[in-house]
Length: 481
Image 1: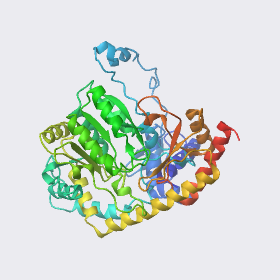
Image 2: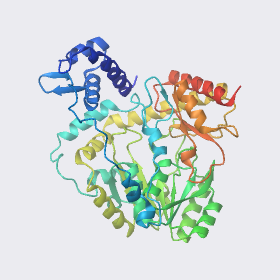
Image 3: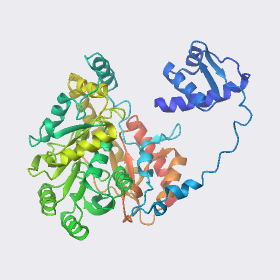
Image 4: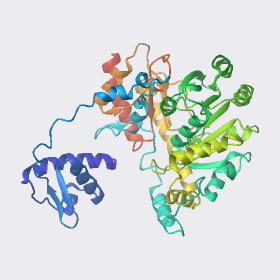
């Protein structure tokens, strides 16, 4: 069971228990809760913190936890009138050309923890059992002992970490061309803001990562879809889109694209660079899944940045997906005057990435455990992908699975024509499985209903099989049969 599920269940049990104590009464010790519920001290601490945040428990260092007393008179008075904010926040009132409201639902669906007992096919990160937790803990401990580890780092990032990132870029970009960022999402945000002024069009693959669409809308730019197929973005339509819109930015994921899992075909790689160069445009390359390769993938193509001599590509990479959601260390790489703009926006937004986190990242990737972790994840993702694909074909043959990726952590399924995505998601939750809807992956009307199923965020093959069985029950409810 996930730690966060254990915390939620314990908090629910403790809410019932504290009803038996008088306001101000002392609660049993943490050790008592540990023994009674067979959970870790950390789980007890987090559950009590949750109850304290709800105003049900008061903790006093050195004394223990107590049931909170009654709230003072007036504490639950009705809040003031905040309706004025609707006017203040509206784009029309401010005279803005681009609406400022941001729909983050496509991102939140992969970040939100489902209720206890629900199988997570909607996640965006590795299950704790796949994360290198021991190696991370050891790396963080070693990093904390390094001289100057708690001092201010260079705003561009530690030189050694920039050099490590640069080594993966095929020799066309060096350490001086790399900025260390607070994860891939931060890097993408910086790149979009640097390259596209508010109101400008930005070309994106269709479908594409919902976080990218949220970034675009938050920056006030207009995402314009360019259809993609099993070989990546359709380059003839990309050229048309540049001509029709005058866009100066194209965002793509050439390797194990999210959500389709497609790899950009070799002939199209050269075309993307040529088309962008002729349009006087940048290509933001989101290389998020390079280290999520499966064991059967074979040799991988290099980054687009490795084929770029003219500064067309702004490259984004990250350690977060392959290591831990909390290791928010990523990178931006670019050549030419654009690097200064990227650096300026990065500094204004973040100052710098905390040095202990950068030092820990260096310790991790420099340890013998790193390559062992990469091999282990590659083998496990391969097994899980095959397990999920086989279960879907056997139990849900009516769902189209057009592509089996050789990297990444999910499968992209097309639902039968006329399927109500929202109804299926609700039915799936009732059946005990959370899936990601397809609608947020499109910035225009989608051609069909889809769902994305992640096989990386669950405990293993048994949970995958059970999750598919629960999804089958949901499909039977919504689709019949």
